[in-house]
Amino acid sequence: MMRLPTFKQLKYLTAVVEHAHFGRAATACNVSQSTLSAGIAELEHILGVSLLERDQKGVKLLPIGKEISQRAQDILTSTKDLVDTASAAQLPFTTELKLGVIPTIAPFILPKMLNHVRTLFPDFKIYIREAMSEPLVNELQAGQLDILLLALPYPAERVHSYHLYNDDFVLAVPKDHSLAEHKTASIQELKNQELLLLEDGHCIRDHALDACFMKSEDLNIPYQATSLNTVTQMVANGMGVTILPQMAIEANLIEGTKVTSIPFIEKDIYRSIGLMWRQNTPRIKEFRALGDLVKDSI
Image 1 (tube, helix red, strand yellow):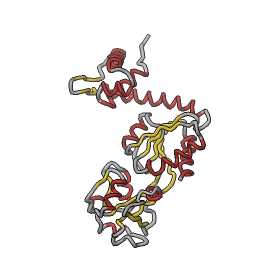
Image 2: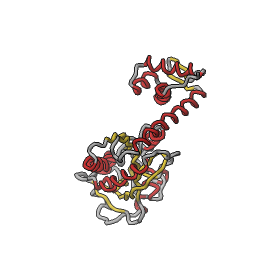
Image 3: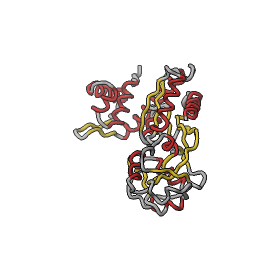
Image 4: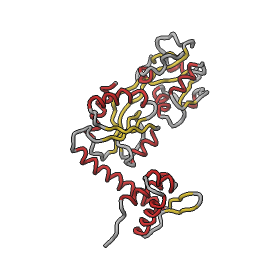
């Protein structure tokens, strides 16, 4: 009778591929390194091929190992979706949810949203992972996260994006700036300013520039920050101006600082806030209901 790999062995393999290190993979799987190594060795014995090269420098994935690990990840993700199918047959918000959120949304929406959810569904457990869009999408596709709350559009395969609402962009300037007393600002005025933006990898940077029909190479960008809090402090210290999302203003990001916000005179200067989930998830009804909770909470 043909022996088949176990789910544990497939999980060990995908963990080694993800972490490129046996020790870190073992920690992620909550087993000893010897247990994980034995599991990988047994998997190779069952399959009759070597999947990895091991040396003092680390782990190298062989070509067949890459294909097997991808198939293993698909199996693990499909298995999770199978479990989710059973969960979806229950009442919504009765199990648990692993939610990924980008940093330019998390501090401004999560406090109100989580309080709203706890009030309505006190037994519903939500686990939060905050990171930039690319790693979150990778974890969603790998089945490590159930759903994402992020700015759209974001390119990804085998996912469904669900628009919730538009978050306007505003211009933020020092209170002693020549534009500070203006009721509105125009995109054209930005081109003569030192514009402070978040560093590459934060999708709000691209969304803001796209909304304003600008490109980085056409602007004077003296400083790139790692968070909206940091870029706001740079504006307060007179280093330039920036573009902030309205949700950050409403969450009092600039309160108590020497920064003021000005709406753009042009229309449609915004980013789309929405949800993203795997196409084959059985929890679509629940995820749409979660979207309603997000909109209700704001």
